[in-house]
Image (tube, rainbow, N blue to C red; front, side, top):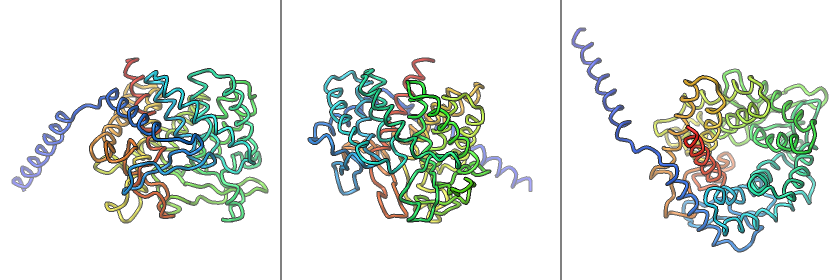
Amino acid sequence: MKMLKCLVYTAFLIAVITLSACSINRKPINEQELINYCVDKVKTTMLSLNEADSLPRNIYPNQTKWNKVGIHDWTSGFWPGLLWYAYETSGDQEILNYAEKFTEPLKGVLDVPVDNHDLGFMLYCSFGNGYRLTKNKDYHDFLLVAADSLATLYNPKVGTILSWPVMVEKMNWPHNTIIDNMINLELLFWASKNGGGQHLYDIADTHAKTCMTTLIRPDYTTYHVAVFDTTDGHFIKGVTHQGYADDSQWARGQGWGIYGYAMCYRETGNEDFLTTSQKLADVLLERLPEDGIPYWDFDDPEIPNAPKDASAAAVAASGMLELSQLVKSKALQQKYFNAAVEMLTNLSNENYLSRDINQAMLLHSTGHKPNNSEIDVSIIYADYYYLEALLRLKKIREAM
């Protein structure tokens, strides 16, 4: 028994020493170097694009250039948003010209009836960043119209914004709200402070509170979709659309929750939102695999042979960087800051950076596996949140 204890203790010491050596020898992340890499990628892509209403979305493993979509695709705002971020950090006038060029066509998004919740992704990432950097009054006024348009999907009986009107009949979901919708609330919060009125704040605030008790499970994993009754607004059930199963933990959804509730706390000061963001982050961190990048769904039975999702890591890293600046204690600040830096470090190695492989910044994202769509691809929103996270990291470190 004594010999066995000695062997166990020796093995433990070897493991600790090995882990310490790995930590010591690991190259620390250089965010400015990576930001420069991202800006170079943006420049390469922008010089290859001719039509301002044809926007990058994904690149499959056997391709080198972006496949493109029109302005009504839910991802249409991420490319203009990347241009605005690249301009913000570089001051490059040519990038500014392209940012304005690719933002302008998205005004057409509001030329048709509002049929989904994605106006925040589409218009706040583009016009929102544009207004933040230029104070263009035209952008300001358009964002107010966009916020009012998004608000038309709000159901006061339920207390949330309807995410997918098409699913009401298609899936028999009377009123459905998805975790992704948390990100679109920022458009409403912004508008409420910039001439849009208190009702937009109230909609966003109520939406977040309702989702906190329906989309968020007691163990702080998330449903993808919450289904509600429209007669009295009660919660019917939680289901999935892009995850593995109704009760599984879809990785990007967890990231949307971390990011969305941190933002909601920043806008409202509601401590429950802050706690929710923390708990969601804790659950994600507890389940990360060895390389620190989530599988597309943490409960896919094919793990470790399931696809990864770099986009989930990028969203979560950006959200946790914001979270690290909102929590009160130094220990928690350091916890979420370190976790975000670790995730960015893991995304920034030879396994996930595309380098010369294709026009994107990152490889290995998963869009919609149950639909056999965008599996193990480069995807535009992974790049958007990756660059956003790097810029947030730089600002935090400069303020230290």
